[in-house]
Length: 337
Image (cartoon, rainbow, N blue to C red; front, side, top):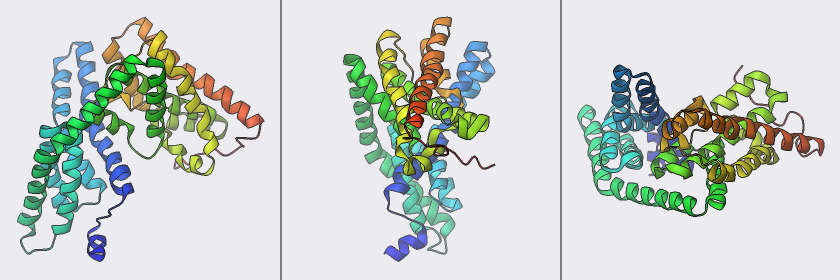
């Protein structure tokens, strides 16, 4: 059986299902729901119905995009990838993003097992993939989605009741998830984080990205500043594994700023922005979508998402450099140049 699974590219590991699959799910989400929401928001602000219609169309294809993305990420053959479009759609219909994830994941792995095992592969493979995905979506996806939504509701309720403590917890955990090789965006959407919890999550994620970008400027210069600050702080993962102390400055920034965003300047957002931080400025766009665009909100975003993380992380990182806890070159990234 082990040899068969290896031959089929089925790897029963946490990396395959909790890192690779979630990461590709996030790409599917961004290519449909998140970009669609951005387009729709722009259309509403510009009073341009064409963009609103375009955004609605993209958002409506979230399930198929997740299905295809997960199948592609797991190395599925073409027939399985194309059939996963349908299983992702079924998952979304019965259980939202979490339903899509489960249905696409299981149907893809089953589809890979039967692929090219019969002489009528063109019928068997898509049939088995779609049958499996639909069954999982209908009987498993919905309860999982319900649990994730309820769990997310507990997080939002707890954040409203204990904004300082829960603000720190949510901001820290979501920030670390964003920097780690798992998808904070997928987690936020499966939990359906909204309101204050999503607002502090955005602060924590932004703190990781801007914090690392500024703290590592002397190693990575402008290219690294943009790659990390507007791209992803995951670029620092290889360095974090070797030098874990470099994680302290941006994490501390999130811990210090989250209570402000939860009490003094109450920040809110939605699930699409909660796990994105400053990546492509999605977190900021979703904050404006939720809170409305005004000078006061703009100031809050600039201070809590950019200036605050930059200043706090720089001060802490420079102190740690002087004490020898962070050494020159430890935050150097490979941007592929």
